[in-house]
Length: 57
Image (tube, rainbow, N blue to C red; front, side):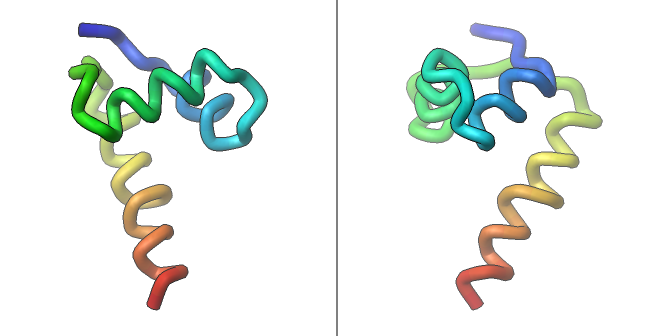
């Protein structure tokens, strides 16, 4: 298990750090189980996942 703070998410989504991108890809594929704060989790759901779904529509 790994603790992901907001900096990891930011660097991964901006594409500025290969290690952060690798970590997030592992999380999204289910290979790595992260521990995230409720605040970060809801921000990711609201702004990243729902935002991506809105762009596809």
